[in-house]
Amino acid sequence: LIVYEPSTRRIYFDDKVSPSGGRLDVDANGPGRRLTSSPVENIHWNNPPTGRYEIVIRTYKLNETSEGLTIPATLRITKNGQSELIGLSVTAKNETTSNRIPLTYP
Image (tube, rainbow, N blue to C red):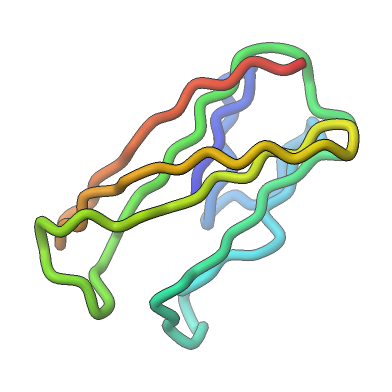
């Protein structure tokens, strides 16, 4: 999971904390972690900056999924205690691929 903030600052596995307070606190299937076929990743803010975000779901390596198959994904966005679930499909590839979702806050 990668999130680009309105400032274009990127929060992801290699840069988990942003000066805005954004933090990647769960990085499934990351280095040194046990692989799972149902990964969950979280990026959160206590006070997110206002503006346009870009959310990226990126596959780096395949686990038990064949290349070219569609992987279901769910994006949960929680604002002011209210959650919205967005169903997504990600195409599995051995190479890096991504799906980009724009989001404006608030």
